[in-house]
Structure formats: C-alpha cells, structure tokens
Image 1 (cartoon, rainbow, N blue to C red):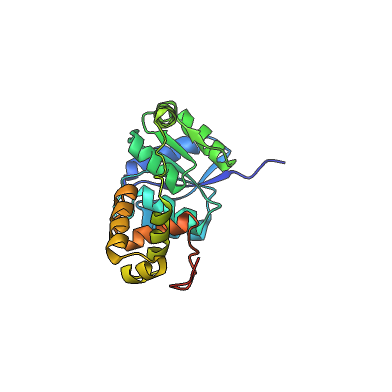
Image 2 (cartoon, rainbow, N blue to C red):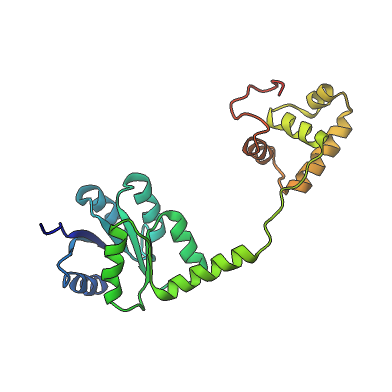
Length: 225
C-alpha cells in the first residue's frame, strides 16, 4: 500500500522563490504541496485549515516572521513540523529557531535535493540540518561544553532567611522582627543578596527563591517556613 504523500505548506514572501521550491518538491511523488503563504499570519491561518504535515518557511517575512510563526505553531498545532529554509546560518539565528521549536534548518545555499531529504526527515519526527548549519550548531555545543559552568552563589544561612522573608512579601522591619536583628542588618543582607545573585528587584529575588525551592509559589505572605 502506497503511503500518503507528505503534505507541505510553503511560506516565503517572494512568489518566485515559492514557485521554484514547489516545482522542485513536487518532482518527488512522496511530497504534496498543499498551500502557499506570503507571511506568518497567512501561514498560521492556512495551518489551521489545511493541517499540513510540514511547514517549510523562510525567516524574514513581513507581519509575522518565521521565528514567531514557529512559536505559534508549537503552541497551537504541536503535531505540525516546522522546517526552516533561510540564508541565515549564524549561531544566534539557528539557536533561536531551535528554541522556538523548529525540527530542521536548511540553508538556501544547500543542494536543492537536500530539501526533499529534510522534508522527509522532519515528517518522521527526526531533526535535519544541512551541513553548513550543522557545523554551526556543533561548534556552539562544543564551546558550551568547554565553557566553565557558572556556579550558584553560596548564601549564608542569614542571607537565606532574609531571602525567604523577601519572597514571602515581608518588609525589612517584619524580617528584622522575625530574625531578632536590626533593620539595618536586614538591609545589609539584602544588599549582599542582590550583589551576589545579580538580581536587583523584589520580583527577581522572589522568582529565585521559588526556583530554588526556598518558598512555595502559593505560600501565604508572612507564613513561617
């Protein structure tokens, strides 16, 4: 039994580019181009109605670019795979697109035959990168492994107590009363906390305390740990 063709939606703001890609892809019987869009907004609307298997999209487009489109598809239509086809092959672009949820990234300078391989791979749930893009990603991963991992600042027991009080919404006076110290002492610990953690807002300190499990996100203000 012949498998159903892979349904592809093309997204690029240049009609000539879309026609060329469509002509190339449809030479392969395993692929069917079910629609075309000139920007991310139009593409998202078509995704909702056509339910393609793969969205092949450029990055630079008016109204909604490829990055925003990828993020929107991941939120609304997680079964739809996104394959990026772009001139950009620098680390920032590639990592941002991967973080947005794209399954593959092919440079427009790659061999056209690679497009078919890429579409087939991502439709199977695999990742696919053209050679030049893969080198950029690999180099970035190597650099990340070689870089020293940032150490979590070590807080003193008193700094932890002050941090917990801040995260619970207590004032400096309330924290001082709880700990049996002066307000000035609490202020000093607060300043040290901000300098150590590089966090200079109450909201930021609260998020840090919650992330480290020092307080529960739903703890009533002022409740003792």
